Amino acid sequence: AQKVTQAQTEISVVEKEDVTLDCVYETRDTTYYLFWYKQPPSGELVFLIRRNSFDEQNEISGRYSWNFQKSTSSFNFTITASQVVDSAVYFCALSEALKTSYDKVIFGPGTSLSVIP
Amino acid sequence: GAGVSQSPSNKVTEKGKDVELRCDPISGHTALYWYRQSLGQGLEFLIYFQGNSAPDKSGLPSDRFSAERTGGSVSTLTIQRTQQEDSAVYLCASSLGLGGFGSPLHFGNGTRLTVT
Picture (cartoon, each protein chain N blue to C red):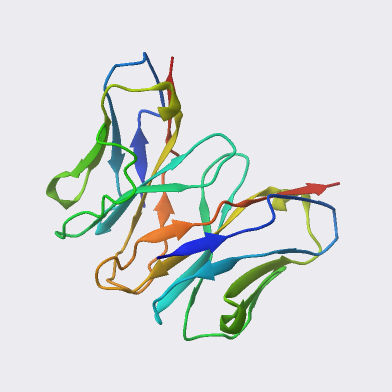
């Protein structure tokens, strides 16, 4: 069965610090997708990135970067030089490509990030 | 274009009453999801519709919860005989549902349900 673990419940950093949000997943499928979503205080969930199980290249988008390691079943998210606007709850999510439940997306419990000015 | 629309945005109901929550997905999206988010908690999967396939109801917490999707578009989540523990934000999301290709979800703003 699918499972996503985000061990960090809450993190506080001072502005301009780097911060890494951890995500560990479980799946029996060989084809799957991993996602990160952001939920700012306004409440609406916003998609950040998708990664498929066959692509282990790290990705960088501005101050955001993602490290996918199949060997440790992890998909960690790093924010460089954090800003107050990064304060939000961040969710890691997983979907499998099993024919019986493909595209079913399971979310981790989320990590609440507070960036202090 | 228009995003996922949910109504009502807020609903206050008395314990024991039935409620209906509506979700209007993005046009052309074949997959539709319902999640529940209790205060300060993560997203709890409830149900998932994919095209004309039978929905995945594995997340519905009890038989008081049901959902339907008419014409492959609008969906209604019904909670019968509401209980106080049903109080939460109910989130709807839709995606292109390309069949195992990990289409990103687009979320609505949610319906905040309060059971008194």
